[in-house]
Amino acid sequence: MPDAGVHRVVVVGGGFGGLQAVHGLRRAPVEVTLVDRRNFHLFQPLTYQVATGALSPGEIAYPLRAIFKRYANTRVVLAEVAGFDLAARRLQLNPVADAPAPDSLSYDTLIVAGGSRYSYFGHEEWSEYAAEVKSLESALMVRGRILAAFEAAELETDPERQAAWLTFVVVGGGPTGVEMAGQIGELARDTLRGDFRRIDSRNGRILLVEAADRLLTSFPPSLSAEALRSLERLGVTPMVGSTVVDLDASSVTIDHPGGAAERIPARTIIWAAGVTASSLGATLAELTGSELDRAGRVAVEPDLTLPGHPEVFALGDMVRVRAADGRPVTLPGVAPVAMQQGRYAAEAVQARLRGQEPRPFHYRDKGNLATIGRGAAVADIKGLKLSGFIAWLTWLFVHLWYLVGFENRVLVFINWSVSFFTHGRGARLITAQAAEEAGDRPRAGPASH
Ligand SMILES: Cc1cc2nc3c(=O)[nH]c(=O)nc-3n(C[C@H](O)[C@H](O)[C@H](O)COP(=O)(O)OP(=O)(O)OC[C@H]3O[C@@H](n4cnc5c(N)ncnc54)[C@H](O)[C@@H]3O)c2cc1C
Image 1 (tube, helix red, strand yellow):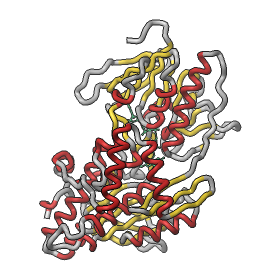
Image 2: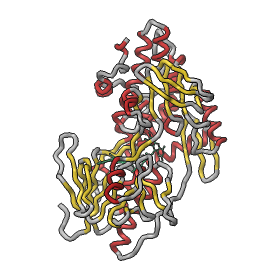
Image 3: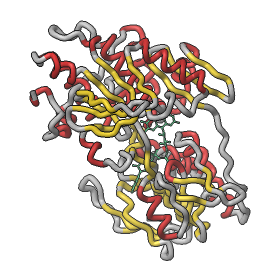
Image 4: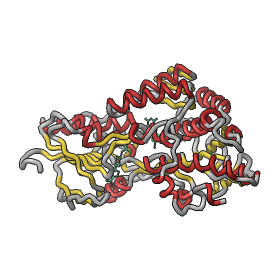
């Protein structure tokens, strides 16, 4: 337990923001407690590679205890944060995974970095049929579904039902949707070619549905066009200006530009559209009277604290930051924002302990990257627009650099190098876990037809 009298900092969330906050405090004269409902840090930018069998779960996740093993002032608590008593400076905790957890934790400074989750635009029921790739569990489920769809197609004798098994729909043409569609394209065109006897996996139809008039709207239009061409080369059909209006176990209905609706039989749908902030954002907004936007992000002051509570920081995907004129600004929902904010919060805590006031948070935009497939990517780095192999190498280097854990970096590097030359994907497994999770779902396995 923390020494009496030592300043207690509790950090909620061992994601990109929380990790940097703890790291920044490692030499500070404080007791740090990191609370997460998972016992690992997940490198979300690569979960789609787990979902397509390119990487294994352990290569993109790292145990929080191992990360902070040598941080003398840090302890890790596996628990879910259920609520806050801001007046008493205490958090309420719930146990997870049958591991006992304290009922509550007291703090002098609280840093909340709870992240976000995918939103289904008010159609939460769609999540049963259209899994996302944000969590490791869901990525494994998607992997199982994609691979099981090819197995089912191989056994199917009815051509229409076979075509439905071989139709993959990715909803959302942002970086995750583009990366996901590109990877399924590679899987169908390249990796699985020749693996089956009755079907040709290259006949797989991959649709990428995006409501905006172009893919990758956070990139310049020329790079969106480049990404579109690269995807088409991989056999992906981008459908821009189109909206998913309904989906179920065996089909998706799409409104095309001009208003024509089309129902497409498809057994595998992947959701990569729209995110909503962690519910911790709404809880904090309610407790402090701070603004909440439609995506559930709570507005924080320019120093990332909550109004009236200079001892409570919130950061990352779950916040908007007020500018000098008081207007909340939405920063991109990307790892560098959360990481810079985590570092800032750690510095701000130390500045306050020295009796100084921190300067307002300022985001330094380092650019945007998205990969499309083997040797293809787009990058927009401070106005420098790159595409093709050079952008892919940049993407590769950046992701290896930021991946947590030296061991993981080495493993991923080896894996990517082998895959590059052999076109293979070693983690093409339909695991019992994925099969179990798919469980009773009507769309899950080859046995349903
Ligand atoms: C599929 C995908 C691909 C992405 N690709 C990229 C990319 O290529 N580049 C990029 O820059 N960004 C990418 N992002 C975005 C990036 O991952 C996020 O912006 C970043 O993770 C936000 O960091 P965070 O600290 O706010 O939240 P997170 O990293 O999500 O961390 C939140 C943590 O809080 C924990 N938590 C939440 N609620 C509770 C609770 N009640 N109690 C205890 N613990 C809790 C969670 O378990 C988690 O560990 C991607 C995101 C996704 C989903």
